[in-house]
Length: 278
Image (tube, rainbow, N blue to C red; front, top):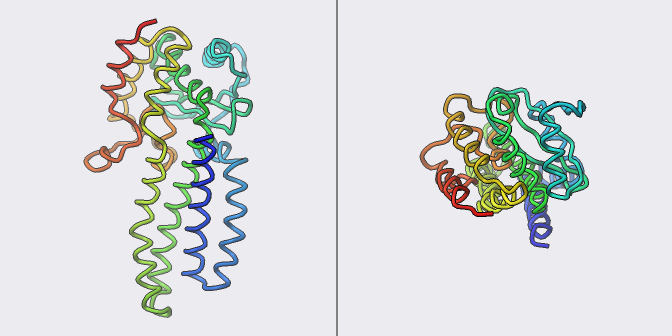
């Protein structure tokens, strides 16, 4: 129920923002165009946001049931008593993974080629258990929609900048200032939307995943490897708007961005996993 409410709020926020920008840039006609676009985007965000994210990362579905990753996901899904999700591989040397979809019956897990090569069987099983925990805890829909919305809002910021530069002189002064303000605050709004995905969900997914397979050591070890790899092999695909979907932020961040991170401190996560008892 809480996640459903968050979804409604996020979609409502997106609609309001699009209508506001449409009115600023194109007046009444812009408002109508923005309204039509908002309806299409809201529909698309619910039904196709997972496909959009998978396409963004050029993920390829694994259909070979003898593939190591497929076999691990199948084992974990059976232990979690969940339907078998679709399995995808992201063509990247970075070490990371995420889960997506709109429900447990329409879910998918994706792992990078790098993480499959770098982790042991136990570690990869721990990572997949974490991702299946997101499915079990019904986090995937809100997480995927938030990533789509954050990406759209980032685009709106760019659109507002260009509208202010090329259309500002021909418009009322107040509209020009509004566009400039919008260009500044929309990236912050995108970050706030990502932060709406509570950091506590990662702690819960860690604990749930470890309980599913009755082993927390594999995930703890995997988090250490993934954390170290980000510094040398950050994700080149996608963008920061989807960072919250991954098991760890796949992009380099420092300073203020660390404070605004959607993921809790990795060392804290590792320590919590190491003291778990089964």
